[in-house]
Amino acid sequence: MSRSRRPPATRWLRRTMRRLLARVPARARFALCRALVDCDPDPDLRLELKVAETRDELEDCFRLLHDAYVGCGFMKPDPSGMRVTIYHALPTTTTLCAKWEGRVVGTVSIIREGVFGFPLQSAFDLGRVRRQQGPIAEVSALAVHAEFREAGGSILFPLMKFVREYCTRMSDTRHLVIAVHPDQSDLYEAVLFFERLREEPVAAYDFANGAPAVGATLDLPSAAAAFRRAYKGRPPHKNLHAYFFELELPQIKLPRRRYFTTNDPVMTPQLLDHFFNRRTQVLARLDDRRKALLWSIYDTPEYRRVLPPVDQGASTGHVLRRHQRHSLRAPAEFRLEVDGAERIFVFDIVEISLSGFQAESRLDLPLHGRGVARVQLGRMDWSHNEVCVVRCKQSDNSRFYGFRVEEPDDAWCRCVAALEVSLTSRELLR
Image (cartoon, rainbow, N blue to C red; front, top):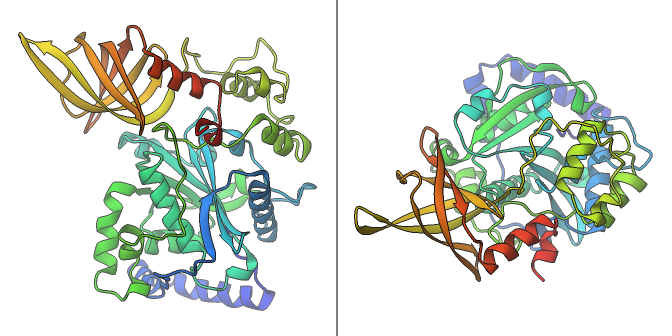
């Protein structure tokens, strides 16, 4: 959640305007919000948008977030001067930053579903979103530096564009969910077309120090049509459809990856120790269940040396698999013989382990069929394995098939091994 920190007179004026606008029917109010949009289709090249991956970048993001949250009452001041949550420790969380002349001036985190779920699950039911199928990510920890908050959307809109491009091109996300202060709900509902998870705000959202919150969701595949209808024919600086879906911003630096993974983990053992043990006490405050879950994720000696001790009898609440699964989106073809003729099925692999994988297919695959799977694990990494279809799970639009890999080849083993030892994105590129 984020809300600007402004002088008292400015805050009073804005509160008064919001109260007056709240009396305007939603349709007219939303139209007014869209009319006030001002996006820069040619941002200054001093702006850079990237994944926060270094200690300095992460520290600057956490400090910026702390100051913004303290300023609007979403957290109490922390001795570290940073807002660091347990979600930032997970490999499924990516922190993005906006830098102006090398200085972090904006940040937002994308939390893909991991062992701790989502922060907003403590207050909002995601059942309706889950029934639509597709991966979910929570947009959280948004803050813009005070010097840039009055400059329209000069930092906010580039960050939001970066979120959309990262989620659609790099993390295979279909649904975004978000919890925002009611004062900011019109921005997300009217301008960005989020839909509320429930009509009434939550009166006290614990993740934001008991502040009220509105929960909302956006279906990314259908968002383009909504933006096109609302912004069609508007000039470039007011056309958010063109801005989000057609414009290429050279300021956005998408991460490089060796494999077609859907996460960009950056937390080395040293960074985990620095942020979660030395600068804050986030790990020490975890209960035994969460400690055990972290041990199940970071299961190498280098990581476990910096993790808090765990009670061996603590239950994670999860059945731990013999071979851990890893998320990625890799194209594959499956060749097998059906009724005396060779057939080729093309699909995407969405999870892999040493002993198998899960694939998403729009076509029916023969259960228990055996053949050869050719998989592109990365731009330069291919794998060929004998596989067997062992199960099928259907959703509204797709079918998910489980495959057993009989004897994984070297390329498959190298890929899984790299993911299993919790290498960061930088280390995978070496």
